[in-house]
Image (cartoon, rainbow, N blue to C red; front, top):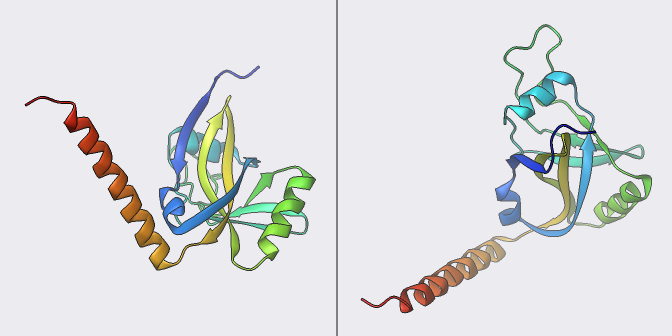
Length: 157
């Protein structure tokens, strides 16, 4: 029986939604050492340069920065090591088929605790072009301005 209930967000990759078109998302467990879990519980992680890959029928999370635990001893973990992802075989086969197509990659979106267990949300994504990014920013800005205009319209000055 888990001690914690619900989700606690540790880190999110907000830039991924700006740089990529997100196709599918998957929730995966991670194989972590004890000091990595303690560092995550303290809220320390960075997904900025992270990506996932599939090698020999196993999914791996690479280049994700989980800093060393400050109270750790000689058996502390290295901060950017490869971490195995826990997925079902059919999910791994789906991911492998998608990333074999040109332009697709696996990007971590967030790390969180779900009922006390560390999870990572990975996405099958396709990179955006510069003009796509500009268009998405313009649409978001227009939506904000419209909402601001609608909210101020109800106020009587």
